[in-house]
Image (cartoon, rainbow, N blue to C red; front, side):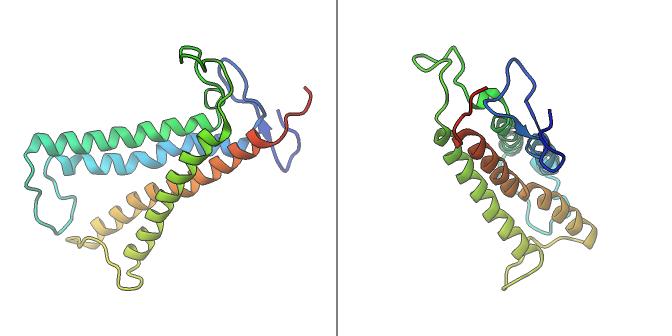
Length: 187
């Protein structure tokens, strides 16, 4: 449902609707987050099995099973957190599940979502700053040496997509906060 051509909004899918309509751009950003994290998750997997992915560094000294477990867990957690950000545009990000004792079915205080989402968005934005400094060798920063330009470019693109996560989460958090903190008008 659109309120205007300049600022389209629509209600979220699912068992109910959000308290207020979700802007279409926020819905799209929330859908993109897992896709933005996926390339770096896939990039990490061969590293867990000992492949250096073009990095000109010494191999890890961890046992293979620890390396694989670490990389797989990190990738799964990255995707889980990316999917969790969908709560910023879904009804389940606004109301506690009914099975939660004492608070089930009640409205989630907006700050309970906004504070951790903002902190994680700022953390990933700091990673974005680090990525820019290292990738473009600004101010004496440098990244891992690679065996050739192709590997270096691939690593920069994959990690560059991942660090977009910070600004995307901050934008979603801003939209969530605006929707949740404005007074509710009569329906």
